[in-house]
Length: 584
Image 1 (cartoon, one colour):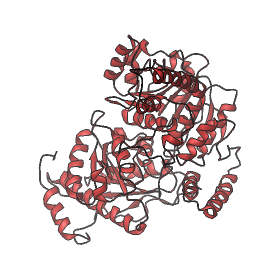
Image 2: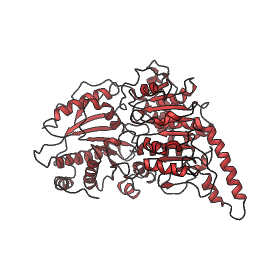
Image 3: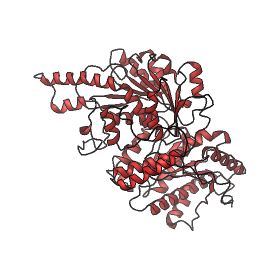
């Protein structure tokens, strides 16, 4: 059959120590207070890193580089030990070179790396503005009548996450903070939201689906000892940028009343000259090879510029040639800090240890081919997740999957089919464009809203998801929690798409996730499928170079007889092989 070629299609690749996975295990061991295991893992890390021969940053948070409150906060959030790129991002501040490039494989913790670096750079401004906010609240409390109640005062001094259409600020009227001191530019709304949520947590924010405080939680506001009333604002679209510019004309809105601003290039462009950068100390451009960095043109001379990405390629050289950044210091995925050279950053790699597979959907020779592809995907996904859960046992995190489709229309169609097929086992969410709701919300609700429960009913009740279906354009930086499986559904990738494949595959095997994960490419059984397989083999050879002992493997689509639930398999056969409109 077309989906059963030789088991191995290339020679096994050389294995490499995965320090990011080891740091994840180390933090987990410390969290559960298993210090014997932590000691063994630390020795493993030291041995693995010592073999590189490079001068690398030690994997501890530099207490001399972080304010005491920020060091305590990252540890309370579960990041007791940094990954190499996170340690290196702080070590780079000791360099005489102003600008920095963070280049590391997908899933290595780059978002936290630049977020901590940003907060360190603006810590002085945060504390100054917090003092003014505290004084204003104190004055309002002393007013009578019409002053603040204690509850209102607490809300006013709590950190605020200002997402479009959602204002978590307090009820009190306080003086405007002024223009932002820190800026993050991200290419998509989902990446911008992810960065905004992380920055909010670093400055004391406690994201809570239940809308209640838990004083006993380590990441609770009650334990936070840093500056009060920090505002993190986000702008995702050109319309939101224009609205913020209009509000700025009267001295209000996120451009005049926030410490940290996260925006897409479209929002920055629409804000125009209303975006006052005079107070800016640092600007970070995430996924810089896919992001317009025009905001860097107007930065104050002393402000630091940080370019971030897994596949930066020529983006750094272009930024240097244009004068947007000075020749920078480079921090790589191993934590080495060195001066950037023009031949750096040619190709990023996938996280180590990922298993790369492919399957070819059965061939029908008629108009039902698309439906047979959906049937193959549904059977494969269901069997894979069942097998992962069975091998992991009761204490293993629930398996989660991301399915990438060619475009938004395909995401809607595939999402509807999988929702019908997997109902009762997996909660399926679909994102089909920037305005299709918060992609981070499904991840957020799945983790925080379930109060530690991840059975099907709990996930659905919380509004979360265990399977996320998105267009391939959303692959960069998507941080869905604990992804164990990634499916590339009939994407038609060519040999020149290695960077894109690295971003898609990198949704699993990420820092903080249990297990390294499996990436499966589902190919269409047309006459050209051997050409597609050849291109995929070449891609995996590039992005998995020296990082895994596994090669590209073939996997067969489970037959009806092999399906554990024959009745469910028959239901799929009837439902997914007939033409129908997608369900709502």
